[in-house]
Image 1 (tube, rainbow, N blue to C red):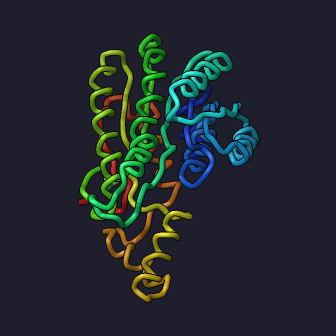
Image 2: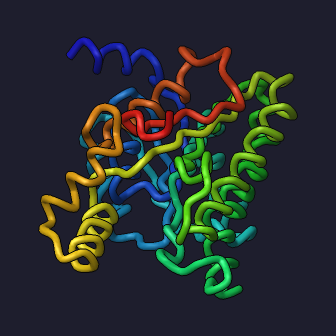
Length: 267
C-alpha cells in the first residue's frame, strides 16, 4: 500500500500515451501507470486486448481511450497524438513499448532484406515517429517524459539476432540525440533495457532450446536463469517499475540513459 500511495503522488492526473499497451510487459506498464494516477491513451493495432486493458485502467479510477495506431505509419501516429490532445488537452508522458523480435537464428548473411526492414520499421522507426509527434508539444509546454523500451541486445552484439540488435542499437542513437535536443526544454528522454522477460516470448525461446538440444523445459529455463547474476528472469512488473521511475519527477535529473532491467545479465 505504501508503494502504491507513493506512485499515486508521482503521476496523478498526468496524461500518458502507451504504445503496445496490452500484452506482456506492455500490460504491466499500462496498469502501473494507472495505479500511479495517470490517464492513458492506449495505442495499438490489435484492439480487442487494448479495450480489455482499458477497462482495467478505468476500474482503477483513471480515464482511458483506445487508439488504432500502426507506429510505422506517420499518418496514424500523428492522428493518434492529435486525438489524445483533443481528449485530454496535453501529453505529459510517452512510453514506447510496441516492438517485435525479428528473425531468431539466421546469421547476418542469411537474414533477408525484408526481415531486416520489418524489424527496423517497428523497433526503430516506430519509436522515432512517436517521439517526433510528441516532442513539439512537450517543448511547447516545457515539460515531458519519454520512456522507450529497448533491450540488452542493444547494448551488446548477439549472434543470430543481428537485425533485432541493430534495431535496438539504432534506437539508442535516437534517444541520445533527442535527449540532447529536448533537454533545454525540460524534457527527459530515456531507455529501459529489459533482458529476457517472463511471458509468451520467453516460453517460446525455452521451448526452442529444449527441442534443439533434447533437454527439458526446466533445464532450458535454468540455462537462462544462470546467465543472470540474480539467478532469476525479469517479469513485466520489474520493467514497469523502471518505467514509472523514468516517467516521474524522481528522475528529473536523468536523461539520455540506458537502464538495464536484466538481473545482472549485462555487467
